[in-house]
Amino acid sequence: MFAAGASKVIDPYEISGRKVHELIARPMIVDMLEHTVFGKHLDIAEIEIPLGSCLSGNPLSALDLGGRYNVVLMGVVDIEMSDSLIFSTSGVDHKLDAGDMLVVIGPAVEITRLKGDLEEDRTDQLLGG
Image 1 (cartoon, one colour):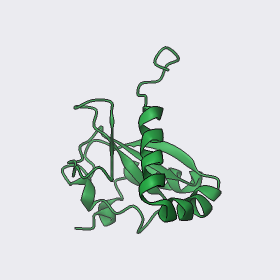
Image 2 (spheres, rainbow, N blue to C red):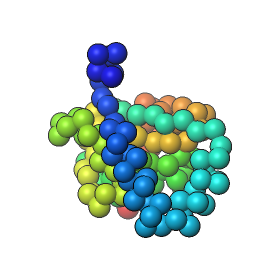
Image 3 (cartoon, rainbow, N blue to C red):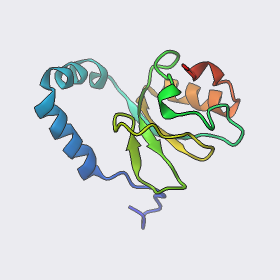
Image 4 (tube, one colour):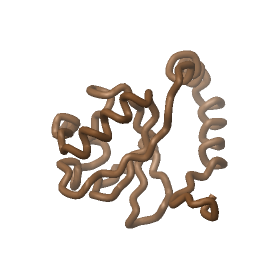
């Protein structure tokens, strides 16, 4: 993937392993997600937090995307630490910085709207506390 021009690679084995774990640990929740959220056409995207964003310096737990956008936050890639995805459910309350990449799943129109709001720094309402 790197040879093809990708700058970051999310390990499909890690994602698959987590999926299998979820199927075993919480089959009802996974079944509900499969029939509601993932039954629609969704995209996955990396969205960079721009320099000067009001999100910088805030913990990942303070970010509330679901209140304004129809997207699910998968996690964040901290470019200073590594190219690994820190899953939002991992229990790590990562401090967001400019240059970090939010990884989200949702309809293309919602992802585009979120990107636009981040670029225009209209995201202060996304901080829940």
